[in-house]
Amino acid sequence: MKSGFVAIIGAPNVGKSTFLNQALGFKLAITSDKPQTTRHRLLGVHNLPEAQIVFLDTPGIHVAKSALNRRMVAAAEETLNEVDAVLFMAEITAKGMERAQAVAPRLAKVNAPVIMALNKIDLLPKKEALLPLLSRAAQWGDWKALVPISAQNGDGVEELLGELTEVLPEGPPLFDPEVITDLPLRFLAAELIREKVFRLTGQEVPYSTAVTVDQYLEPEEADRPVAITATIHVEREGHKGIIIGKGGAMIKKIGTQARLDLEKLVGGPVFLDLLVRVEPKWSRQEQGLKKMGY
Image (cartoon, rainbow, N blue to C red; front, side, top):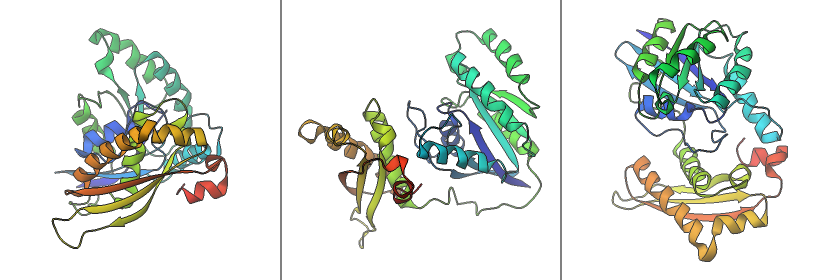
C-alpha cells in the first residue's frame, strides 16, 4: 500500500480544481472561467486499490498585488514544504505555456518528486501539435513524468494517477476510505455560493466578493430542508447593485443555482437565504481578510 500528500500547483485557471473534481468523482472544488477562483487550500482524498492519494488543491501562483492575492500565493507555496509529491499543472495554450515556464523555477528547490501535467489537450486541433509542447515543457525542470491530460473529459487522468502512485511512499491510508475531504459543510456551502457569483457576474465584481455562512441548521425531521443563511460581501455599493440585479433578478439566479448544487451536496432539500453587504476594502486589510476567513 502507498499513501501520501500531493500538492497541485500551477498558474491561475489551468484546470487544477477541474482535475481534482475529475479524480475524486465529486465536486469538491469550485470552478469558473475566471482566474483565482480557488482561494483556499483544499484537501481531497482519492482511494485506489493500491494507494491513497491525498490531494491539496492550491490557489494559482501569480504576481500578487493585493493583500488577498499575496495570502493566496503564500498558501500555495507553503504547501510545497508539506507534501510527498507535487503535481505541476500547465495548460497547452500559448499564454498558459508562458505562465507555466515562469512558475517552473519555483519548483527547482522542492525536495519532493514533481510530476508535470499538460492540461486542456482537447483544445488541440491535431495530436501532432502536442509533441513540441511536451518537448518544450520537458526542458523546464527535472520532472519524474510528463503527462498530457484533459481534466475536463478525463483523458490521461488515469495515467497521471498511476504516475503519482509510483512516486508516493509506502504506508497505510491516512484517512478512512469513506472520507473525501476534511472541509466542513459550512465552508463548502460558502464556496458553492461564491462560485455562482464568479460564473454569473462579470468585470471586477467576483474578485472583491467573499461569502460567509451565518447560519447552517440541520433539520430535526428527515423530510425537512437544511436551512442556510449566507452573506455575500462586496467592496462597493455599485457591486451590491450588480449582485442584487434589477428587481432582485441576479440574487435570485445566484440563489437558485447555488441551492441546486447544495442539495446535491447535502443529499436533500435546502432552504437558502442570501444577503448582500458592503465591506469597503476588505480584500486589502488584515482585519477584513480575517473576517472573511482568509
